Length: 412
Length: 215
Image (cartoon, rainbow over all chains, first blue to last red; front, side, top):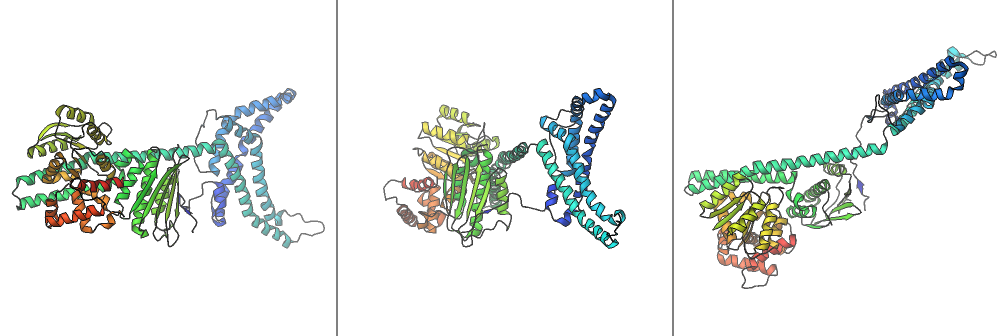
């Protein structure tokens, strides 16, 4: 028995890295020649700006205040820090773009950024800005000193360091340059991840993604309904009326006359157009699905399948429209695949609601060997299911049978 | 024959009225939505109702629901339901009610064959059953049993029976003798475990057996 193959919703295509961490995980050659090490260095160096501004303002305040300034140092620091919070928070958002190309939503500019972001700005101001600087300096200074060792190496009184040895130092320094690039990018990546976590709470972000995806799916469904309605009220009715008028015209002509034959041919053409239009509309938005729900719609699809299909779907309620549409699509496509490729003698569609989850299984007794890697059919199905937060599993060992199992959450 | 038509598209409503008048029927009322249909039937007491499945206000299956409601109150009322799509689910709902009056369920495409459509109207008004060949084809396709036991010719005959055709009409359509058709039908009924009986309704029962089994 082969293990179920989970079809990834998004094929792991070679997407361009969007954060310093993504870039770091890529092939070393590509990373080292990319802009990411430089972007990371810029990120770290930029961090010094607010920290330095804070220190300058604070020290000048103390110098001006003398002894009194020293006594009030703590409240003064608090005052300066709070005055700087809003611009620093804005600056941190701006700086994040160097290390993370993904958009950052939320408040910005002159508005109060919220406690999370203000806290992050405060920590950046007092501690992290300096740490950023330290990392950048150490990472650059190490290789730089080694590379320049022929120049800077102090000749000891014993004359131990020969010219050859200093060149070994240079070589080591050169070798350390990529290491420094990794160190800088790693720290930058970690800092950016931290900043993102503070600025854009993960949970809010995934919730927003899920919501926008649901909106897209709903808009897509609404559009399909509109197209179906337009065709139904327009082209279909007109073709029926046309075919009726042709039929009536035929009655006025002597049977068997050339004109009557032409009219009859025209009527047949109108009939074919109607049939094609009906098949098209069935794929766009089946009326029976909207009216009677998934079990009835699946039975009707099963009735049109050339392979005998047993339908065993028991649901105690109507499901959300987008779930019904996705499940219906899976059944249609899978049954079409069964008819085309499986060589199956029979097929069964089972559907149940388990703990707010629609579990739909299409199983045939065919020859198996369905490979999600070949052709886009199964991947397209998985994408359609993923758009409603569901999963699609295909189990199809060579020699059969094939089982396609879909799970879609219904309680949202 | 007094007819009430319910169809929301003006084009089709007037076309249908013209067609029926052409065949000598009296269109008592032609309405555009389900509530108006119920009212027109109460007022006109027609010999047959011809209704579209999908009508305002919701454009889902108001027409079908209105017809089922009418039949529940008047089991003898013949109804002919028209639709842009035929689905076995709807056919089964119509036939399951099995009132005494005739029932028809046809694709709107069939209207174009005006003579045959007029014949279907007469059949339904006379208490017969007319089911769209498309529905029958859906039911006959790929079903394991008991259809596997029927020969291709018998299936063909059964699909014509399901269209509400008489033995003579089937014989004409298949270019065989009446006796041959009668033999085929006897064989079909036997294979469907419908024992011989003087009752003519067994023909309808044969179709119903499929429709019910499918739903």
